[in-house]
Length: 128
Image (tube, rainbow, N blue to C red; front, side):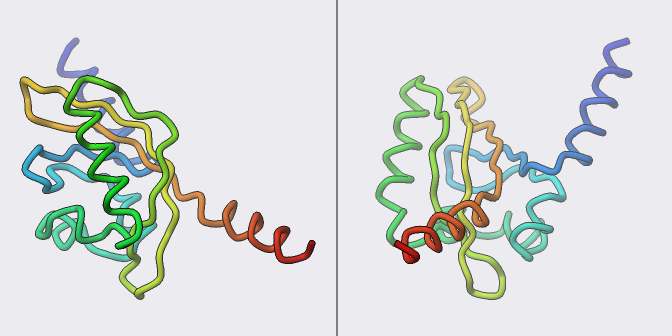
């Protein structure tokens, strides 16, 4: 039964429209689902070959480092936002929910592309 459940979990990982990830405390992604490639244009291998902080917008790096420290201290992250670089050089706003497991030295995270929301918000702000 456990193997069957694990198989189903793997299927959810592959089918999810949200970006699912594990990353090590060393700053590199371990496992990424296909939504990462669909959203950011990079291959999974490209994303795993560089520290994840390299993909974070320079203006968001300090807040992202702070958030990873909070995770490592045992706090969960809910509704954290930052921008990630798309392969075409533009940035996508991501909304994160994450936790860390210290014994495994891993972050478990779900991210959602909320760029469209930010674009509408900016258009409304400019229309005023």
